[in-house]
Image (cartoon, rainbow, N blue to C red; front, side, top):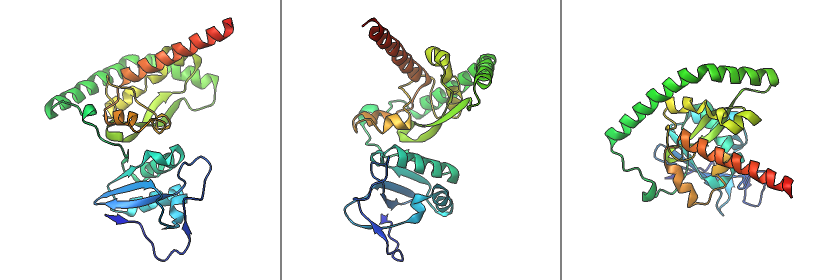
Length: 249
């Protein structure tokens, strides 16, 4: 285990510095075998590393490094996690949230059963994509005609064992939000192996960092499209009920 120290840099920073939007504006880098651990800054002063302030520079450093994957502490906050996720994406390095494992959330499935389930999900998701493609085309076309904004959104989501991936969704409109049709592109994530057809809710990165340490344990599971659809539908219905109650009052 090696902590990042660069002796030629005289500038150092402490935890007293603050950047807007960051819970912990600076971080400590620790190498563990082929993994890079990114965690909040400790009490000991660390050298100031300019590369950590520039996404493109960080991506270039990661490309040249022997690091195979990055694990990052969710305590660093959404802004810092997005920064590292974007850099890792450019460097083609997988990035995971650093989570506490729990036996409660460990799947009892054997290797064979897990492979069969993945194959089943892939086949069904691919068929659903073909069947719903006319509907998806009409929905995308209506969005394009109504606004110049991007039709497809690619937010960071948290997958199995805390792995971050881009979740595909249509831009939310009143109709698509109410019906849940904006979730159709999530089938692409199932085909890519990042989600399952059924399973727990797929949390966005912004939502995941707000969870308690205990709640974050559920992020060890493979998320599902149906679970996310049901949760969003329930939240949408609750919002409608709250609005109606407010109007009556």
